[in-house]
Image 1 (cartoon, rainbow, N blue to C red):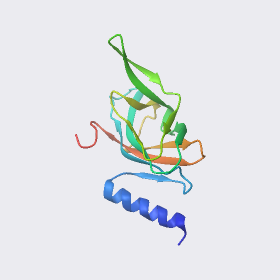
Image 2 (tube, rainbow, N blue to C red):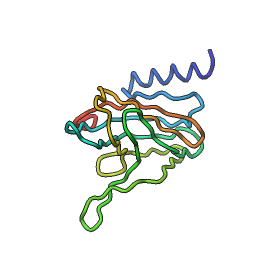
Image 3 (tube, helix red, strand yellow):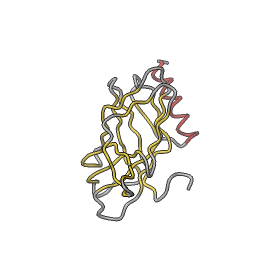
Image 4 (spheres, one colour):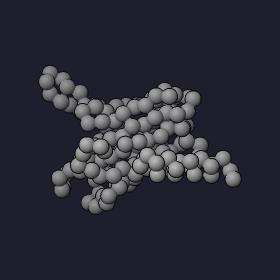
Length: 150
């Protein structure tokens, strides 16, 4: 059995155990996703927000090049900031995750801004994270009213 096959089997086992849905190419940056979810919005909403935790289990810095999904017109990384008592969202130009570190995208902080959603999203929405090393991590985000565990 090839190392790639073993890695895929290990990832499937991890998904079953942790309810984390991830898959990627075998030359991935060793970034894993967990606790992914998209907040359900009212019908006709033009923007949704996505949240998850990204963990770099590799030994080099993982740098995000882009995020993409066929379910949305565009996907951007944003951060919520309070300026003069007013909440504003600002685009985050880059994301770097050091080896052994995690970055949490959460309500009120950094998040995925999911613009122009498809009319029918279904129960899970695939979103691809493309890394500077050329690897791709695709995560199936469930649509939920609240964060997992709430």
